[in-house]
Length: 312
Image (cartoon, rainbow, N blue to C red; front, side, top):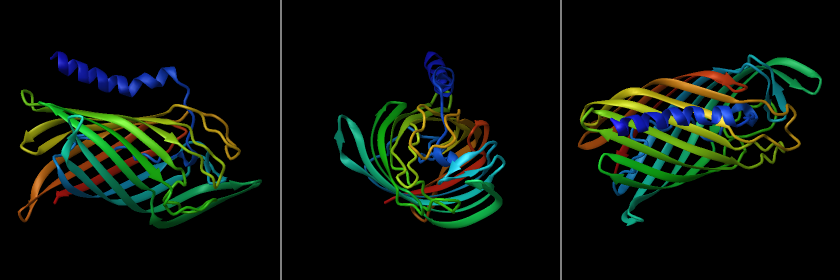
């Protein structure tokens, strides 16, 4: 029970600790290069040595309640966005232990399609406009090191975002943010066999570099994802999922015309993870859906994701 209380407090603290003590600012475009909601069940588990391929698809539909910088123009309050992202991830976990843990390297290649409707202001001119299009997203490379101690697993990681995605300044359908970044964090999983409960958390910080096309440098960002699941049987978990986002430092650069303002968002939803067979090959299926709330100066809406992982 003491361990359960500790993990529950850790989850609550991760959600709330930065709310009161730090002034947050807003990211350019109102989006982050780190995709919120990508960690849930088994967040802290680095799998055994081998090669793993994951196919994932996500849907996001949202609106924003205030103006936001968008590639040198301004989108008015009430803008809406519909985004469809698909990605392939390849993970290789080495045979040899490093500091007693499993070392893995991976790369994620996304593609997407976006539709935006907004009141667009450029200079003194404003007009209601829409834009849509698709293309390659920003490629993410990652190094992770994970350990397992009985029922408790945890993983440290560092990942780099390369500005490879479709991008144009102005009101255009962008898939990448033209914003290089480094994200580092720690994730844990405690699968308590006595209660069949699984406790998960993943916290990280994104360090952003300047968007050289707009001279806009987004401040650093904090994200926390969590999941509390119940194991219905071997390989099958269902439960609550969520995430919390806060920006830690202010934006800067000559392209920041709106000045500092608070930006944050929270989300909660339902998720499930299960293992089935594709012929004789095991395949892990993950499904999650989130409802965002408490958004300030950031997009707020609904997101869902589904993924399938195969080990070769």
